[in-house]
Amino acid sequence: MSPAETTTDVVAIGNAIVDVLAHAEDAFVSDLGLAKGSMNLVDADRSAQLYERMGPAIEASGGSAANTAAGVASLGGKAVFIGKVADDTLGTVFAHDLRATGVDFAVPPASGSAPTARSLILVTPDAQRTMNTFLGVAAEISADDVDETTLKSAAVTYIEGYLCGVPATVDAIDKAMKSASRVALTLSDSFWVSNQRETFMGMLPGVALVFANEAEACVLYDTDDVEAAVRRLSSSVATAIVTRSAHGSIVVHEGDRFDVPAHPVGHVVDTTGAGDLYAAGYLFGYTHGADPAACGRLGSAAAAEAISHFGARPQVDLAAFVASLGL
Image (cartoon, one colour):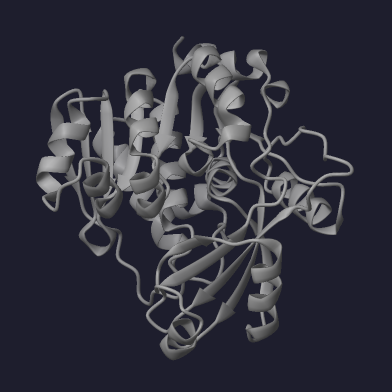
């Protein structure tokens, strides 16, 4: 099915999370026993303890795949999100915020369940973010929540790596892989890749596009050589995209390599969501017929906007933003 024959550009499947962001010094992160820049899964008690010790915070609806869907919508694309929230205050906030971006989010909230997920994010002066995520009901996406017709009508189904290997979501991911016209996968986090390497490797034959940063690609293939990881990844999927922060990104599409520079940013405020918005830009270009290099440039521009402010979702109209750049 070509993009021209679809009614949706991207269906994104992932954790529905409300981010709670606060500035923090390196020493504070260390005192909490956290590795700066890491993503940590925590239980309800640990989440409450961390929240008590955090400084003034802001709440912003997040979740990796949801951020990507919001980015696609901001670029002018049609995006659908599949994720799980509870029938509680944060669930209402998440649903409102996502729909307000133009994303179609129709999965009903769960009643009598675990609460809506939240991620406590400490942002240090170097703009690195240390995430402490209580998943709550987010990781309970079932096969019933995944509508086959919706997936078949989409040019791309984008799967968040954090869901892969989670027992409660196995059936949902399997259904998505089988029903989707074309699958894109983000590896999400190097720690998660190290724990779910076999899961990810088993998924690659059914995936058309993979998004990874350097660390995730290297962990997937158990190597310190980024170039070796890129070669192996690009030999496994039609399109491999490896982001390299300030060094831009590497896109390998059907054997052809494109080295895409990072879009310049005057001041990096918060790197939360950089990879999510890169994927949004790339997928928007991909579903609208752009060549791989142009897709990469769109991704870089969207990521640059995301890291220029606090929070993971766009704060400007991305369609107008990339148009002003000649993209």
